[in-house]
Every structure is written in C-alpha cells, then in structure tokens.
Image (cartoon, rainbow, N blue to C red; front, side):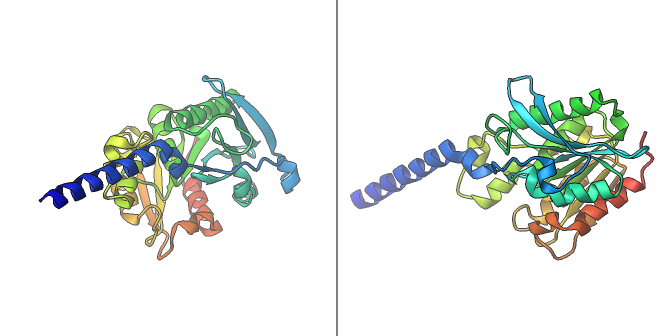
Length: 269
C-alpha cells in the first residue's frame, strides 16, 4: 500500500511537472515564426510594395501589397503558423496573374515584424491590415479574406467584426484548442491553453459568402474539423474537398485556383 501511494505521488509530480513545462512553452509549440524578410523585388515580384504598418499596441508589421487590376477584388492573405510571407511568394504571383490585388501580412514576430505572436496580437494585426486596405480606397466588399491553417482562426474573427466581400478558409479548425485536445488527450488543454482561436464561437456572425477547402487525410488539422465549422456557418457557403491529400495541399496551385474560381462567381462591390 505504501509503495502504491509513493508511486501515485511520484506519477502526480511528474505529470504536474510536465503540464507546467508545457504551459510555460506552449506558444513555442503553437507558433513557428520564420525570420526571412527579403524585399519583394529581390524575389522577382513587380508592382508589389513593402509596407510598414503600425499597430494600436505599438508593433510594426510588414505587409506586401500588390494593387488589383480595375474591377478586381483584393485578397487579404492570413498565413499559417510556420514560415513567412516570403515562403508564399508563388501564391502571391498566382493571384497577381489573375489580376487580383494581394495584401500578404507578416504576423508580429514573423519576418520583419516586431513583437511576439499571440491570439490577441494576431487579431490586432489583421484588423490593422484591413484598415490599411480601407485607407487605400478599397471598398469593404472588394476585400476577400483568405485564411490558411492557423490564419483561418483570425480570418473568421475578422469577418465576424468587419464587412468583407467573401471569406476563403483553407484547412480550418473549429478551434485551435480542439486540435490541441486531440493531439494531447492527456492534457487539460481547455484550462491551460492561452490562444484557443475558437472559430466555432464566431462563425455564426460571418455573413459574407464562404468557401471552405480541406484535404481528406490532413493530419495537422483533420478533415472533420473543417466539416464541423462549415456546418456551423451561415449561407451562402460552399465546401470543397481537396481529395485524399494532407496539409501540404495548401501550397498547391490547384488549391489556390479553387479559391480564385469561387471568387470569380461572386458579384463583389
């Protein structure tokens, strides 16, 4: 009996220590900011400027902006939790080739932007980029949000609080905490996780046309999360499976084309 008690105490101490360690480093487990910050022209981009945006809480953000051709909307692209906007340069070129405007935001703590990523901070960053586009004279109905992975959590919240023309979500979750709960079933993540990105709590306030794209064998954000978020969304909405592909499909031009084709069906003003 004494041995059993000692074993349980030892297990409890190890478990508590592990939880404490994960709590302290949780943002290092959630965000993987790249630091590359090349000039757009160094990557062969033309007609794209590197803007510096000041946030309401004192950070300075990098945003690449390529204006739209006449009559075309502008995509505000909110990227995932790893890498930088420089890693998405082919996507920006793809949008440009369609005549679309492109605003690629570098989150705080990522390539060229100051600060450290947090949920609150990323929401401020996205609202700052949205405000920049509006000050450029771009109508709200001409702004299309494209959220990639973690960026979907920010896109949903931004669209719930600001008018936009449309929203495209690539591999979205119901909440980041739901994904974490599945990955760490032995951890009470609902109590410990700081940045939960509860898209399911906000999707009901999104009124813009919505497209959800998701790979059926995505092991980073499983397919079922995208389906569940879609089910909770308002009409008009469209769900497109990317087929038997994983999270890497978000870097495939065929995925980007589905979003562009969807945008082309809309009468944006």
